[in-house]
Length: 200
Image (cartoon, helix red, strand yellow):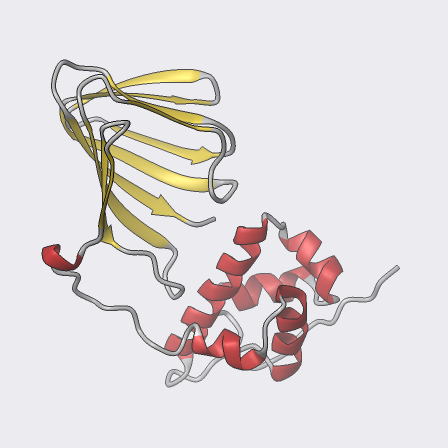
C-alpha cells in the first residue's frame, strides 16, 4: 500500500495568506479541470487526502516538497504554477471591457461579466437567447460545475438530468452539472439571464 506524505506546515502568515488563498484556489481548479477526486490525486501524488484538502482551502501554506509533487502530477514547473497566481485579478471590470461572444447560428449572445481568473472559483455571465433559440450541451466543461441561473427577462426552459425546469423573470435555478444540459427560449421574446458559475 502506497504511503502518503502528511504535511505539518504551520498556519500561514497573514502577509502570505492572500497568496496562499490564490494558490489553493488554483490547485483546486487544476484538479477540477482533470475531473479528479481528492482520493485520486492523493494516489497520484503520494500526498495525503487531508493535506491536499487543507492546501486547496488555504488552511496550510504548502511546502516546496508538496508543491513539487503537485507540479509533477500537473505537468508544470513550480515557476509556471506560481506565475499563475502572482497577480491579483482586476477588482472592477468595466462594461466596455467585458468580452462578448455571439453564436449567430443559434441566436445566443454570451457576455463574460466577470471573466474567469485562476485566483477565483466563480464567474458571472449574462446570457441572451433569441426567440426560438435552443442550445444543447452534451457535457459540462468541468464535471460537478455549480450553476445558478437567474432569469432577468423573458422565459427560459432548462433541461438537466432529464428534468425540464420552466423559469420566468425573477426565478432562479441552482444545480451542479454532471451531464447534458439544454437551454431553450420558451417565450415569444428574447430571454435574458444571469449565470453564476462556480468551480467545484
